[in-house]
Each structure stands twice: as C-alpha cells, then as structure tokens.
Amino acid sequence: MAQNQPFALRSVLESNKLNETNYADWIRNLRIVLRAANKEDVLDNPLPEEPAADAPTAERNVYRRAVDKDCEVSCLILACMEPELQMQFENNHAAHDMIVALRDMFQTQARTERFNVSKAFAETKLAEGAPEGSHVIKMVGYTQRLEKLGFPLGQELATDFILASLPPSYGNFVLNYHMHGAEKGLNELCGMLKTAESDIKKSTGGGHVMAVQNKPTFKKKGSSWKKKKGKAKVANPKPNPTPKAKPGPAADKECFHCHQPGHWKRNCKLYLATQKNRSSTSGTLIVHITEIFLADSYVNSWVFDT
Image 1: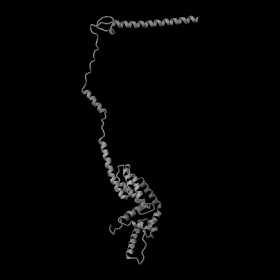
Image 2: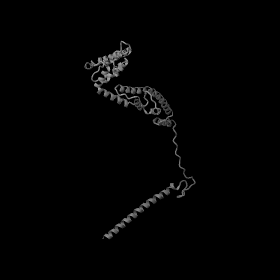
Image 3: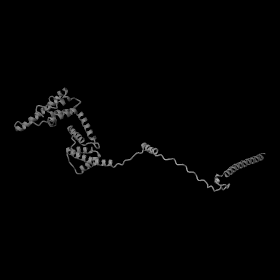
C-alpha cells in the first residue's frame, strides 16, 4: 500500500459512521480497514510504556513509531464517529483505550452479536454432497469473529465443532482423525477435508454408476400393447370354425321302442308321446287323490261336529 494512502478503505467507515445502533458493523469495518493498512494490532494492544530518558536510541525509536501509529488509528476512529460520540472521546488519545470504552458502552450489542455468531456456528451443517471448502472457511470465520469479540474457542474446540458439522459420509474420516490423535491447525484440517471429499466422491460416484448400469428395465404393457395386439388380430383374421354335426344312428340300426330303423329311442316320436301321456296321467291321478283326501277330511269333521 502506498505511504501517502495509509487508509484507502476509509470510505467504508465514512459512509457508515459509528452511532448508538451500529457498533457491531462499525467495529467489523474498522478492523477490515486497519488490517489492510497493517495496523489492526493497535486495537488489541495498549501503548508500551515510554522508555527512560537514558534508554537506547533504538528502543526510543520503536516507542515513537508505536505512538505515531496509535495516533493515526485514534484519529481515524474519531473521524468515523457521529458528532455526539466524538465529543465524548476527543480527549482520549490511545486507540486501544477508546476501543475498550466503546466495547463497554455497547456491551449489549456485542453480547447480541456474540450470541448470533455462536448460534450460527453451532447450527451450521454441511449438507450431504455439498462442497466442503466454503463450509470450512465459514466455520473458521465464526471462530475468528468470536475471538475478536473476546471469546476465543481455541484450536481443539473449534476443530470439534467443525468435525461435528460434517455429514455421515465423513464418518470414517472423523474416526481416523480421532484414532490417530491428529493435532492439526484449522488450515491443515481444511486441506485434509479437501482430500477426504475427493475420495468420497470417487467411491460413491463409482457405486452410483454401477447401480444405474445394472438396473433392470421393464416394459409396461399399456394401451399401446393392446392396440398392437388388436391390429395383429385384424391383420390375420382366422376363419370361424364350422360346427361339427353330431353323429346319428346308422341306417340299419333300429329303435328299441318302435323297432323302426333310422333313429334312437330318445328321438322316437312314439316314445316321446308315451312319456308325455304318462306324465299328464300321473298329474291327473295326483289331483284326484288330493280331492278325495280333502273330501274325506271334510266329512269326518262334520260328523264329529254334529
């Protein structure tokens, strides 16, 4: 960065000056601007004590550079405040002291931001099949933000949260990581996860291809099949078979009833007439017997009644 433009990004702060409602966003932008100018450490470290008058020249020069650096940052902070806040902090010359005072003043906002960051950090999960690169970067960003808010998680706890956010397909990776007692930084963990992601894609991708290739195909019999079948029938119609005539008696065979040739007893006209007369006679007889029985019953009942 050029020496005559130490705060080229200060327009970000000038367009969003600190007021009573935007401390969380303002301090985030302030750190971005100071990080670009390589002066972010001024916010986290107080000024060193002034060396004695008889101190070495090199030590006094280091102190003078620290004072100049702190002065630049404190002036930037004052310039990016609303007038009401400027009047409260215009007599403070140390940038670190100003930030501590602002943090205490806006403690409620900082607590709310800490809660939101912690909640997002704990609830963020990597979806199955999604790329892990952006996910891990987001998780590392949450840990860094909590550290800036004064609540560092530490490398081991941050690693546990990141591993717990992975989907079941990373189960073997997490198991091996714990079994081998790997103590890796977050950047190294990101590289290891990148390798594990490529291995998982190779293994699952091959299995999916085989499953698709070996899948049996079935033809559904629908209306088209029926139409084809119907067309086949029309195209090759079969002639209707002629009914076969029932065999009759031979010419020299005679009926067992009338002894005439050319028919059987069941087809004999005389035999059929005899059967018809017999059924009518038996029916008349039954009627007469019923009438006699009824008449006799009537006579008996009349005699006893009288």
